[in-house]
Length: 315
Image (cartoon, rainbow, N blue to C red):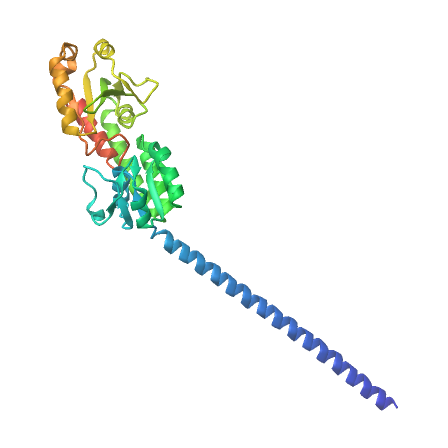
């Protein structure tokens, strides 16, 4: 009888152990399965992120302005499929990119045909361009380019958008160093006064400190006689110009440059108010280089600052 009880006890213990081991085995199997599923899931997420990163650097871009095209070229970005129509020279890198129309109003059908991932232009054109891009379901980026600081900030933001942050940081850092070196050249100079004119074949405006050229004048220790005007560009008051009698007149002809220049030079030579100015008498009416200076900032900002230093303080 005792032997029978012992046998039953032994069989029962064996059953309990077998059941326990079986349960542990199932739990371990479940844990292993969960671990494998987790690892598999993480691997899929990693792969998805990697693909997203890879795609980010291959975004097809339409450059809405010449300034944007030049910035993208400096960043060595090859995937530009559209560029603006312009009389100015565009980077050779984008010789195969398709013209999409004027910066103010790109041709929506042409943009659509390119199937771009991103349209980049300046904030001053956002009111015209953003609704059109939204309708085409094209992501857009509108940037500020009205000062040295905004130019370098824009370079960094474009780099971030395109997944080329390191290249953008390098370009922006280099520009900042060059600009600082230009400022060092004139920091101890007695400020010269200047009038900034923006001319077209039909009109002449004066620019304040919030225009791009006006901001560079401030950076380069040049006193803009209309720096504090309320509007960035305002109608010319020749009476006020004569009263201020600036040391220099800086002229930017952006629209039909040669025609604008001829029209303005005719006024300078024939109007007694202009010929009475010291700037006219001393041959200090300066036509700004259109490759360096424009309505908005551009990649040539440090070169433009050096040009102002040479023009104003080495004459």
